[in-house]
Image (cartoon, rainbow over all chains, first blue to last red; front, side, top):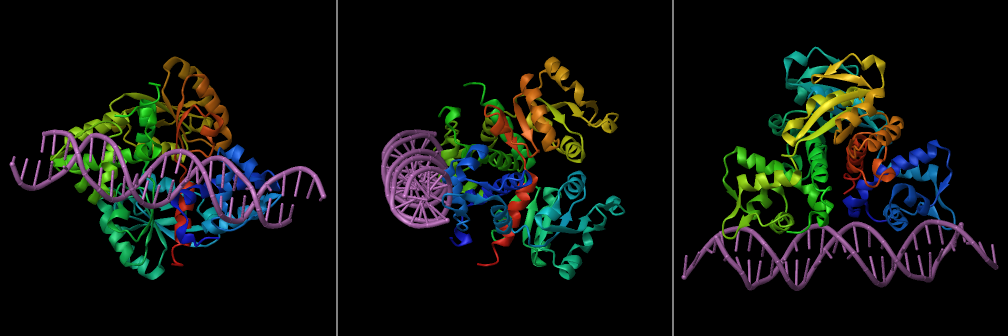
Length: 213
Length: 213
DNA sequence: TAGATTGTTAATCGATTAACAATC
DNA sequence: TAGATTGTTAATCGATTAACAATC
């Protein structure tokens, strides 16, 4: 088992998908699975699957394969899903509201604890049992409650100042839906981007460049 | 300039970000930019930037760099943003509604032309000027109107049948927000996945594995 | 024991970086 | 012309795949 610091981003990017497939097998009552079987349903090579798992430890058994329930638990632990993490949502517009209500935060170990927005018109709404608070209270709230992660659903131009504030208060993990480039500005922050329009552009590229074959 | 078929996914994945930065420079009135300058603001190597652009053609000029306006246009064309593409939305729940209203489809060359949902309760709503239609009309609509892309915002268990129907009607590009693995089931389909919970798990991993350094 | 399948090392492949001649 | 910066080839690095000995 390597030091987790040395595990490549390519491997990490595959973990959630592994976890989903393991959950599915578990739900269907499957007890064991071999890297060969997994490779078929997931469209990967068995070799890659074994390499990936072995970045974190030897979870299998020669001649048998992997125990589904155990492997699922191991992957869940590696992903930190059992670790309780508190999160705040910044920006309660269309997107923010949907993220707040749509995601099963608990299943991933997150707890949404507060919601902020700069628009006074939103500051009487309740979302998921939480009141939308004025962005002016953000600093005070974070200093008192020390949330570990912030979901950024605000306009790009508001993001730099808010991220600055959050970092000053010790929040250094960001689930970023804005176009603000958090990582470039703050290389030490933990950032996961969801750039919907980038994704749609990529699809546009595929559509544009597939016919001519 | 290579055949676009040979351009690697790593390169394609960087295109939208290049395009965004170029739009930004253009908006700020910058006329020219060198790969060195771009490398600094984007956090890439100048070498990689030149390699990436040269997959599609020589857009620069020795001793000068790249003309911002021209490069932006070239990238837009490569991404197919000028090409009009019609899209239908399947699933008008929380997520579907937000996707429909939040995205600037026109800026990316897409036109949302119809919305479908299986829940009768939603079938009197209007979203973005479009009525929510019964999923039962999907096949007929697609055969008559031949949309080029479908946005999948429906539950995983409903996805396989819907995708099957869509493929039969000639729709073979999917912006997939469900957990259904379209690509594995249909390797020839053009698929771009947005797996929000995968993204959140990845962030969880980073949070879980950063402290111990 | 024989068969199966892992964990791990070695070989291959592809992507990124470095270097530099071409040229504006 | 001299300086700058590209386009492109070569070198390096890392990720994926193949192979196989270890072992359940």
